Image 1 (cartoon, one colour):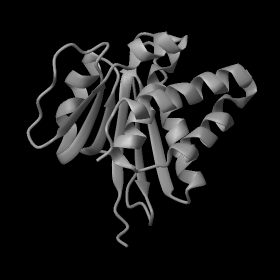
Image 2 (cartoon, helix red, strand yellow):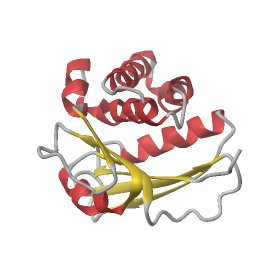
Image 3 (cartoon, helix red, strand yellow):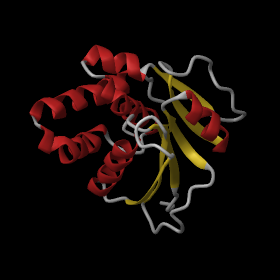
Length: 183
């Protein structure tokens, strides 16, 4: 098996859980025995400014933690789509929050998957889990990580916030997975 690296960028407003989503992916990678690097970048303000997290995932050694052209972009708002959508390789994937991005983006040779993440999160009880809805969609669409591994990572990341928060996030993960058709 080749040690192919998968480069990911997650971007949105500060407060949308971009860093938390990256942390969850990284933890799920560890559970699956994959190598992972992650880097975080914040805009001028934490909440409301832009934030992004880049990850490199591999079964083998990671050659560089720098993501220049992502294989997968998870974009939670319009400014993030405008800034990073064009940085996805041909044959790559853009998953975007249809709740906050009205028009379908067009990128040559890139698969685009809309997810009504914020709307679904509100239905589940908290707009704050829109990032987790998107993670569920990413897992189902790519097969990069198992939903079970992400679920374990949710417990790791949110366990100290109580069972209700963990359960809400697990429901958000499942809802996101159900919003896309695998393959």
